Image 1 (cartoon, one colour):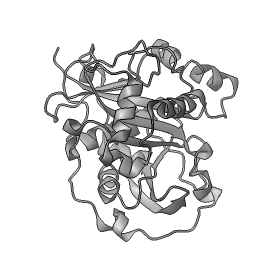
Image 2: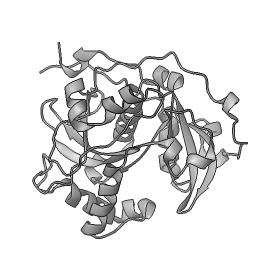
Image 3: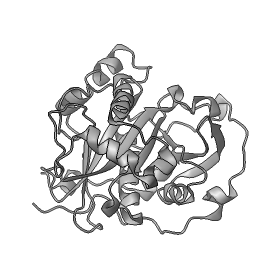
Length: 298
């Protein structure tokens, strides 16, 4: 099945000094009246799962929107059930094979074996967290049972959603798992007291668990797609945020290359972080949207 590029070549690798963590300066907390204005940018739904699949993966999402349109929709996902349905799929032609990216809600069911791997999502996540490269930033090299409890808590809540990322050569098959991305509502997260976020601000953090899928081009692809997913899933979201460890200069630079701007440093209980903002209109200029044909769909 042929497919045209849906994601453009990445922006230049150089990062303006003003955006780098090396030069970040504290700024005052913005008041509500100074929050970014509502964006008119509309994100294509072509890479997001169908309404029926979203209802399956996020069973409270649509119902919570209908019951109270002013409230943030529920991100709850039943992680006890086996699932291989992707929430998001996108072909990125400027990457070498495999170049189809999928995001699938994480499952804690022992019945599921991740495509391209003999391990369940839980075993993969446990192994990834045990990698010294990952644990240096996540500090979560726990037992499998402790990881299960952590992921169950993530999935049982209405304000966070864990996703397993896959690289594949096919839209129809998931391929090989490479890492974990977690979406969350900023206003109920650990960073809630550091900024007056607009109501529908989503945040993310992530890890790349498989060494063969590291590298700047793949980081820009999965990170740009994670931000894109947030804007496309909730059309009222005008700001996406992230909080990489301020010592992780490489990750901060990657986020700036993907359209992020360092707002200020913040002190969390477990780290000093760079609070990075992805504004919707700016991000759209860097990562323009392709149509359904980008996935080989008519």
